[in-house]
Every structure is written in C-alpha cells, then in structure tokens.
Length: 235
Image 1: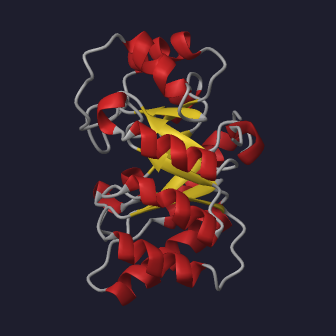
Image 2 (image 1 turned 90 degrees about the horizontal axis):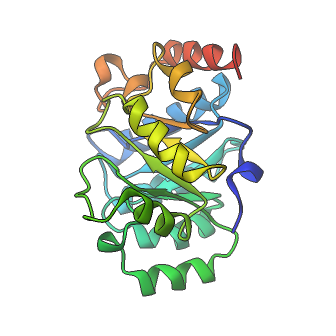
C-alpha cells in the first residue's frame, strides 16, 4: 500500500467536494468549479463524496473531471457504499479512498481485505473515533492497533460536522499512534489550524470553506486562500 508521505507533502490540506446542487448538471458544474479553486489556491488534495448526492453522481463527476487536466490529487468517499470506492478510484485515477470507519463493527473485514489485496497501491484514510460512528466498546489502544493494520492514515473528528476536534483527543491519539499519520477530519478553521496541525499530520476541510458553514453552498475562494496562506506561514 502507498504510504501517506509518498502521496502528499508534509501536513497536507484536503478539501471536500460535497456534490451540492439541485440537479446532476448543477452538481457537476459546482464540483468542477470547486476542483479549480482548490487546485489554484494550493490545496493538496480533494475528496469527492456523495454527501449531497449519490454514488451515481460521484461517477458522473469523475467522468467530467477526467476530461480536464487537473493535477490535484483525487480521493473518493462513498458514504453509502464505501467498499465500491476502491474500484471507482482505480477506474478514474484517484490515489486514495476514505472510510469514515475502519473499526471492526463497521466493516465486512473479509470483503475489505479482498479489496485491499486487489488494489495494492491504494492509500486508505481510515476513521477511528469518527463523528456519528458509535464507539466499539474497546479501549482506544485496541481500536488504533486494529485501525493501523487496515489503513495508511487514521482520521478522527470531534462530535460533528464543523465542530472542532478537541486537542486533548488529538494528543491522546497521537501519543498512541507515534509516527503513524493522524489526519484531522473535521472542525479545522483559520483560528485553530496552527494548534491542530502542531499535533495532527494533515487536515480534511469541508464546511469551513463554505459560507456560514453551509455545505450546500459553493466553496469560498478567499477562505481557501486564507487557510492555505496561514499553513504556509508555519509549514
């Protein structure tokens, strides 16, 4: 499997594409616009997610994106059927996939491992302690040991979309993970980005880039630019 450090520079910023829009045409047009903003403003990667769409919408967007010369690294997160993201990623040249949970109760482990063997060079960002995912009842140490065996980077969040991931939680995870990459999956903003990335090894940013945090709205270019400039100042 491809380690995160070979895919991204240190402390990558990954922008979300939520597939907002009232029609398939609107979803595609908005996704293309957001891809352009992210690439031009220096975001390191994007995740195309069926948050406001469907897996079929993801396919449509990927078809359109493939017609353009985007250099930004693409990832896929199929919330409704994450296991299918492996085949889609290979078909459309995406370099990584995200699973909101790689914890045992949330995976068909046999099928997951089969896909991992089939797609040996695919990087997986795997959720542990992720928003809206019920706890396993295991110790955090056990969850992280299992998680590390199933992905190339652990992703964790606070309690919900747009809510800051507590620094104490990040420290606890990082103390147990050591050199293994830890990605902050929610709640990063201009005010906390420095303190968050002093602990974490990268961040996924979604709602912060939208006006009033509304994921139905287009990405605000100036918010993207400001965050990238802030990270460049201390990266």
